[in-house]
Image 1 (spheres, helix red, strand yellow):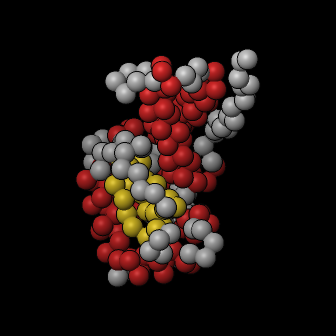
Image 2 (image 1 turned 90 degrees about the horizontal axis):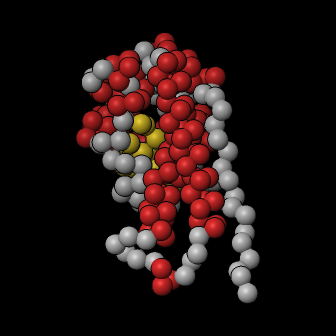
Length: 208
């Protein structure tokens, strides 16, 4: 008897950059950069759906799985790259388009507690962004009830469990090269001026 196949749940493919994000032009992060970035964001969503469909149709016979190469290994590894790429970009665009500067609300308290001052957090966040190859994450640790700036190379490297990511800064060249060339530090300075701290606060878990 053939096993019953369950239709995969598909993710929504983003159709446009949120309007508020386009206000970043005031600090030099252009509409053209966001429009090009949208294509990559859509690509992660489309590939997530493609892999989910392939996994739903895959013959899951354990005898066919292999750690050197197998369809199961290839799909499961690349799924993390596609789906985490989608999640990271969701957070990136959801938390852009604000007034930047000093945070407000609970996230301000958490940053003060973890780093001693907002200026110290900024220095750490910027340094992490220069040291990283692809991403910086501000995440809330459910175990310690604190925030921390994590480094990411690819979007699926260095996962930390039991955390909620509340801010994700893309530092791949596609996020800034059209506007700042190789001057990543200038891009980070601009990014810090357009964080939407209300959106960051909204991502904090209840009881944080």
